[in-house]
Length: 251
Ligand code: ADE
Image 1 (cartoon, rainbow, N blue to C red):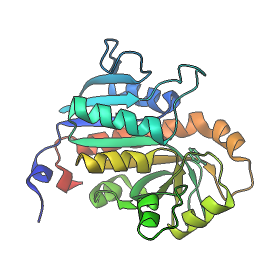
Image 2 (cartoon, rainbow, N blue to C red):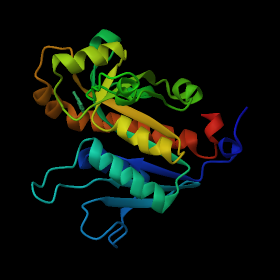
Image 3 (spheres, helix red, strand yellow):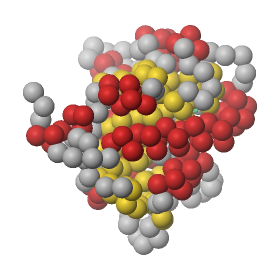
Image 4 (cartoon, rainbow, N blue to C red):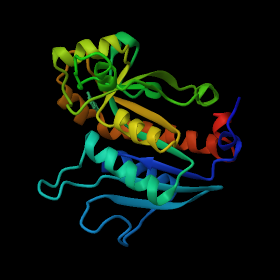
């Protein structure tokens, strides 16, 4: 049975995006402008962009830059915090976590592919005590997005999340056990918060580097970042156009 909330048209969407380079093309395409007032608690580096796109109220939030080091606040902790604060303030009907990811060629991923995520899990939370082990992995299915995947011809795969860009052998074993196709640093933490607060999430992950390839991850990530964020923007625009006027149960 489809819940009532899933049958109401989606009015308000919230993008959670970790990096400025990932967010900028999307802000431009959707005509979003920065909110310069103190929307979040004073002193936090979090940034909010907003606007109206077609029939949708669109908000885009990034965790901004680390106040001490000046680099973007990637990773699970800032992502969880901005997700919590943004849901409380904006009460979105749907969250879209868009960003770049590593991809596994053994699972069919290539540079520039944009994946719609079917499931999320953590790969670096090891607690080898019964039940805590499952809590650590935190595996969750994403909402059903079969129509979206079909209409936009997007690849579908499982996402694995951890706080490191590289992959150590222990993480690799968990990633393999989770059958993941794409690897990021935020998705599963956003899923945790959104699940607590009962907000549906879709994840769009564009592949910048091949984790099981031959090139060093950092080099490949930086080399492909600009072109891949353009591919991500195109997919995001297609997704937003598809969502406009639809309900969660239509996705
Ligand atoms: N984002 C882009 N590439 C990544 C990788 N290899 N691991 C985690 N996050 C990523």
